Image (cartoon, rainbow, N blue to C red):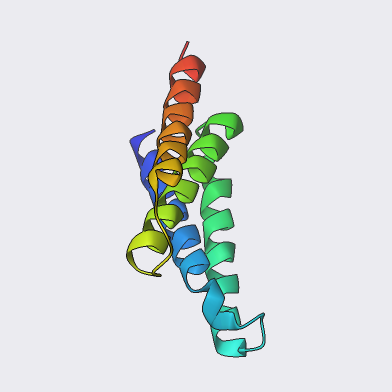
Length: 108
């Protein structure tokens, strides 16, 4: 099970990396960056498919989507010069709390 969560972490990292460079594709006109994004998403989904062999899909997807969303929000604010305010921070906290609640509920 620990290995599955490790793979899930790699799936999240791959998705976040691909999403982070999405603006560089310039609407998929730059084929090199488009290939990087497509490869990142493909790797992420492949890893997610491996994960759901050991972790229920509802739990795996909630963690993947929630933590991926939270991570890309942080990357956007820190590396991509996107705006950051209290409302965005509160939303980010709610996403993380929601993922935790889903995981705790799924454990029973």
